[in-house]
Length: 317
Ligand code: SIN
Image 1 (cartoon, rainbow, N blue to C red):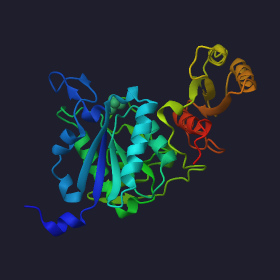
Image 2: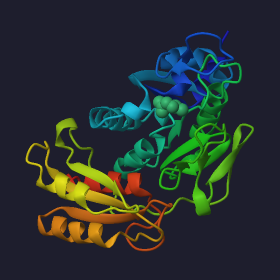
Image 3: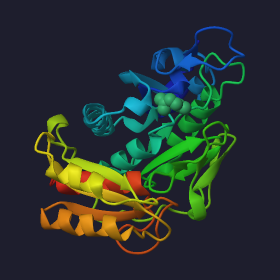
Image 4: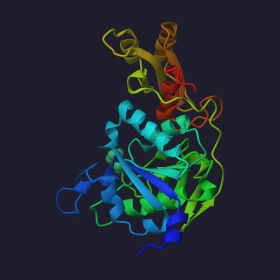
């Protein structure tokens, strides 16, 4: 039987399901590779983790159930609205989001840029499907809830909890296609680690200049594409994107994943100057990893795109 006083003191949190390998199931022998992501419901995932009920009173909501390679603006808008809705409730202490690993860093950074309260938002994911013998999802979900209920987590913004590490949304990136420890925060390192039921914090997240932005309506997202610099990058792709009247919506921004410290081939450079003359905003990242210094400090190309999408959508709150 539940202890009524414990019932009233446990924090209330919401777990939002969006799919991913964490909710994936193998079709055959669980020791073999091959599975479908985004099959199980968030309720089914939590049922397998009885230790959660000791930590929090948990509400759930299934926002989507997809392979995160298919993430789109409609789901982002809906997810951000549901997070804002739940966190506006005084009795809700935090949101946890289960997600696929492939675009986790993009969703996390988008949510970071529209996040308005000091209540924690914690994303988690898994490298093995729920039916695998060595599934990492249950431990990651438990750790995510452990972090979400910590008073220390207030004010950290949006974080990702994976393999016992706590990463800030700005810094985290997927760096392995197969290792369980697939995520890194690069030179800055994680914010901290999960230590039993507690959180050991090593540093605070970097400030997020210009945020928060308003959440764009699903149909109000502008088009921003990423173009890679490489040997023989002659700018033809940029010219096709800018001059194509069939593109709806039309191109508004370009993020260039440059070589090294953000350098671009001279022919691509000429195409970019022309694109800017046509009214396209161009921003430079590096294909090697986050650049240091300037407005783009610490952002890789996919995150710079997220920021530019919000800036061009005139979404400053
Ligand atoms: C996905 O991103 O939804 C599939 C891959 C994964 O979660 O690891």
